[in-house]
Image 1 (tube, one colour):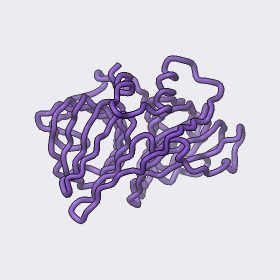
Image 2 (cartoon, rainbow, N blue to C red):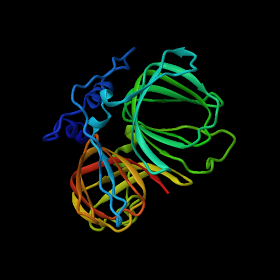
Image 3 (cartoon, rainbow, N blue to C red):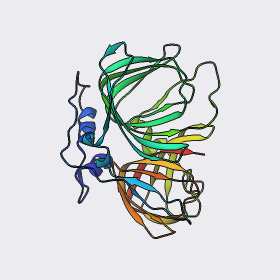
Length: 297
C-alpha cells in the first residue's frame, strides 16, 4: 500500500505515465497489445556531481526515460515472430558499470551467442519471457527484477511492449557454474517486509547505517555482482566509502549529499541513481524508503 501511495502522493511531481500503467497491470490481465507511450513533457538531463576529491553520483528522474526522449535503434535484424523495434537511452557509463533504459515492441528472437555482460533490469511495464538454452522459460512483468548472467544463451519473447530500466556489469569472467546459465526472476512479492532481514550493522550498500533501521534481501550474489532490495526508516547516516551501485527508487523520499561539494539530490519513487566505488557523503531518509539495487564490485 505504501508503494501505491508514494506514487500518488509526490508533492511537486507528476506520477509518470509508465508507473500508472504499472498500477493498472497489477489489477488486470496483460493486454493483447499496448500503445507506445508518448508523454508530452520533455525530460530533464541527469544530474551529476564530480570533483577531484569525489567521483560524485548520477541521478535521473523517471521523466528522463520517457518514451519521447529515447533514441530509436530500428527493427531488430533477426526475429522469428512479430516486428520488434528497440528504443533506448543511456544514463551513465564508467567503462565497466553502466545504466540506462530500453523499450521494445512485440516480437521474439533466439539469443545463441553467450551474453557478454551481466545485466540486471527492473520492469516498469510490459510482459516477456527469457528462455534458457535447455528450453526452461522465465516469465516476468511489471515490478519484477530480472538477472541475465554473463554467458547466458537462449531466447527473448516480448509479449507486450516492454519498458525497463537496467544496469550492466561488464566483469571479465563468466561466474555462473554448471552447464546451463539460467536467468533469475525475482517478483515484487519478494520485496515484502517478511522477506527482508535487519542489516543495519552490515548494510550491503553503505556498510553501517548506525541507529537508523535498515533491512534488505540480497537475492543474487555471484562473483562481482550483487542484486537485492533495500529498505530504510527515516533518519540520517554518513557514508565513508560506499560500494559502486545502481538503484531504482520504489517508495519514499531520500536525499543523497556529496561530501566533497555539498551537492544534494532529492530521490523519490521512479528515480534512478548511480554511485561510484568509494563515494562518500550523507544519506537522509525523509520517508520510509524502498529501492532495488545492483552492486558491481
